[in-house]
Amino acid sequence: MMRTHPYLDGHELRDGKLWVNGEHRFLKTGKPLRNYGDADEVESIIEELPIIASKGYDNLALNCYWHHLNPTGDGQIEKSVEPLSRLIQAIHDHGMYTSLSVETYGVGGGQIPAGFWEAHPESIAINHEGKVVRDTEYGYNSAVPSLFSKAYLEASRRYMTNIVSALGAENFLYVETTVEPQYMGAQWLDFSDEAKAAYEKWLAENSRPEALPFPEEFPAIPEFLHSTAWNCFRANALAEWVNEDARALRAGAYDGGHLWIASDYLDAEEKTMPQRCGDPVELLRNMSETDIVQINWSWCNVNRRPNKKAYERVRQVMKETGRDWVITEHMTINGSDYYENEMVELLENTLQNSTRFGWEFVDIAADRDDPSTKPNQVIPGDFKPQHFSVYDANWNPKPPMQVVESTWDEWMEKVKAPSVITS
Image (tube, rainbow, N blue to C red; front, side):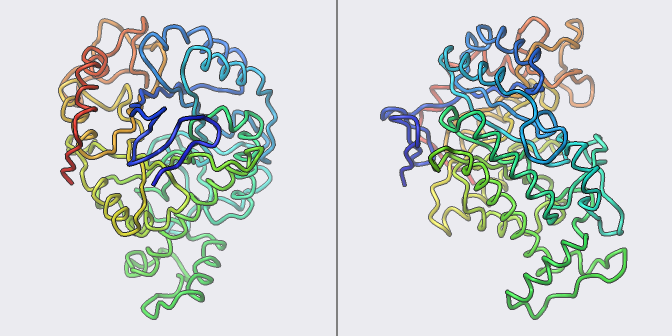
């Protein structure tokens, strides 16, 4: 199936790849993590663009956090986007694409605007013990909203529509839904009153005679937590969250343009998958609005080896449904989680299992806090950089990134070679 870009002539997605005027284009994407509501921070990126462009980046993905641009959390853009619009134009002037990413969930670093919580404290998620949820899994301690909260869904999607409209959909190669959509892997979600209502409505619409009733008291019993119907419902609800977010992003296009939508698919340690996704295959089956599936984890950060089961599930659903998804990776590497001696196996795994859309590197910045006297070690657990960037203070690639950049031409020869799917 071919999908032409609504705004870029000669651009199409076909066979899971990006084609530009009939030639396969493999993207080197950088994601600079900044406060795009701060004019000074935006200006600093503009000044760094010649360096970034010289490193061969094709695409910069701008992660516009909700709380940076809409502190009151009502979905209206409150900070000037004029600096951000100048940045986008400057990126294009340097021969690069821009892509838009949003972070509208309170897990893994994203935050919900403080003003939203002041207005809607009841929107917080409830875990299986009946307690309000904070992000203890990733260590940010941010409040986590219920994915069934009507107030949260309306405000976050209003923000998505407004940010696309304010910046112009025509300026983006693709637009991403929120980073790493999941419930969480360290506890069971969600047991809010709105989650209960949604579950009971779903049961009324679907014949599930084996389904157990929603818990009347906490903690919820293990039989319910692991029940097939509950986790099928959760997977369907998670997929619908992604789908409706995608529709909200597309609604910001001035002409209703389709937009290419990228969505992360989080497939981590298998023991955590029911908590995170319910039924992961059911989640994928119902992700109907996605063009580009960004796999996380493509590399198992616990066992330090390729995570091929993530790709296997995506391809299973592609075969079942006939979808021509682009398969790529969320955050191919960052500056803190990977080691030099792993890079060849990690990158070759992505080429063996993806459809060769490109690689994404996070964070694209000079690491002001990284002591040059302490290079990254090859033994996991010894020393990790103090910053997420893949570059040191002088814009030199850190050892894992050096494996990529020092032999980029050789890697591109592998990209051009016929794909051999091993999953």
